[in-house]
Image: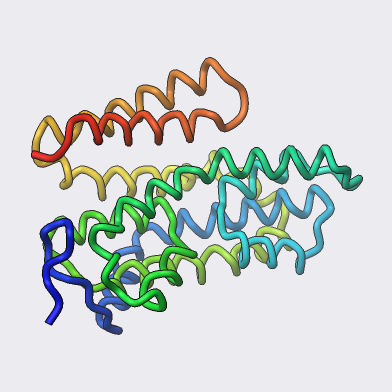
Length: 240
C-alpha cells in the first residue's frame, strides 16, 4: 500500500475513469482551442508551410503560443541565425512548463513514468490549472491530467488543418469574440482556488509583472517574467 504523497494528499492512481473526467472538464474550453489551432494553421499557410508541415508542428510541438511566435519569425530562407532565434524564442516562452510540471511532482513522483510522462508531454496551461484544482479538491487519479491534455490535443491538431485550408477566414477570431473563450475559462478554473487572500497574492503578482513587462519589452518576455514572479512569490509566501 502506497503512503501519502509528499503534498499530504492521497497517493497517485491511474484509471480510464480519471482520463474521462479530465477530458470532460476541458469541454467548455474546446471552442477556444479550436480557434487557436485554426489561427495557427492560417498563419502557417501564409508563411508558406504545407498542410503536412503545419499538422506535424501542431502534433509534435503542441505549444500554441510558441508556434504562433515561430511563424511570426519564420522565413523561407533557413539560416543558422534564424534557427537560433527560433530556438531561443520558444525556449523563453516555454520555460514556464518547467515550473508547471515541477508543481505537480509532490503528487505524481510516486507514479510510474508511463502514467505521468504522456500527460506532461501534452501539458497545457488550461489543463494544468484544472488538474491543480482537481488535486486541491482531493483528487488522486493521474489519468485526469492525461485526459485533459488528450482532448485538447485532438481538438487543436485537426483545427490546424482547417485553418490552413480556409486561411484568412479563421486567421483573426477577434471580431467574433471567440478568442476570449480560453482566457475566460482559465479565469473560471482559477477562481475557486482563491480560498484566501494569501493564495491570491502570487497570481496577482504574476499578472501585474506580466502586464508591466509586456509594455516595457518587445516579444514574449512577459510570459516567463510573470511565471517566475508568481513562482517566487508563491515560494516565499508558502502555504496556508
